Length: 91
Image (cartoon, rainbow, N blue to C red; front, top):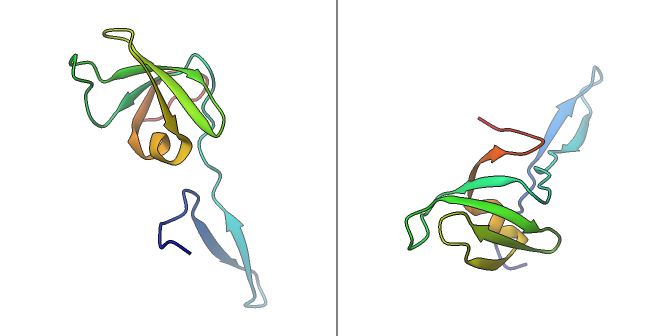
């Protein structure tokens, strides 16, 4: 084990008998065409990115200068502040 935290959290729910059932929190589902805001701005000054490819790696396109970047899923999920446009909008 490398000591890194998992992207999905787990929690325990107790039933009436005092026994616990472990439930996994579901990670956010991103889809092609979603516009997301990242925590850090791109050198062009824009924080808005469009998701172009999803999978083990994400390809995102800067909406300020059209530059495209590939990121591994864990790094992308940690970098997202909020979904601006898409199927699921988060506060």
